[in-house]
Length: 291
Image 1 (cartoon, rainbow, N blue to C red):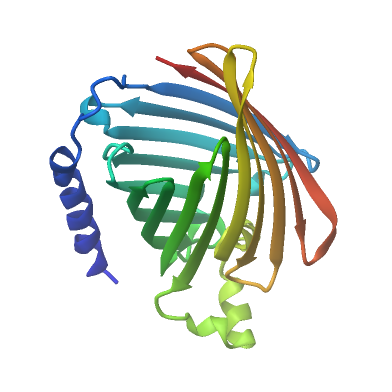
Image 2: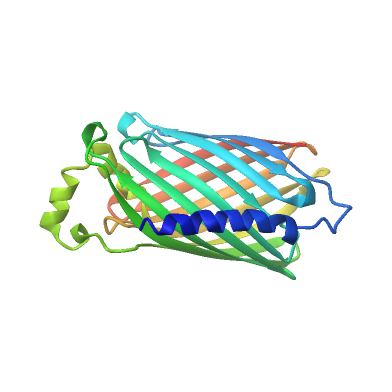
């Protein structure tokens, strides 16, 4: 798979060079809007999550974003972090393109590096996006030994419609496939042998690697006082790559404009799995500052 890395670098470079050509500020009445946000969440298993994200709107409405998040639990071997950086052309164009690099996992345990490209088509009240992605998943044994990599190819598609006055609806689907099915996927004895070389935390974190994800959402914009707000409910189903567990998630999200510069974000999520009878509830609060 080493031949894939030059292709990724060329794709990212080409995308970056095309940005000034595709993006143009035809809409002079629009003002650039940059923001920084902080989000804190916790769940009924006493896990916590913190996230900071910076969005910068450049001249021509090109988008530059970067973020960092970390998750903590009573069991330190499940603590993970995530970082990403992305750049995209103006979302006000009929066709917008972008690219993103992200890292997720626990250092020297299980590490995932992803390279993603985005193509978004905006037409009338529709927005359709297609995102091919390459993932490099690194597994480690105890004390960071016995490292080996697996490569997977993924793609997602999302369709959103905004033509119902203040209502909007969306659907999305994500599929992740390992480029070559590792031999230990089909032979339980070999699988157990390989897993015995992988650290305990890596085995537990493997359940976060999705094989597919599908979702639906419905939302509405509304006035409250002299400000705008939005509310959205979403449903999703996902399945992990390394075991047959299915996860069902229902989430309610609302964003309230407190002023022209401040937004308050609130969400509550219910998650259940096919192997656990007790659902998991999580609650998130976030603040956005615009300039």
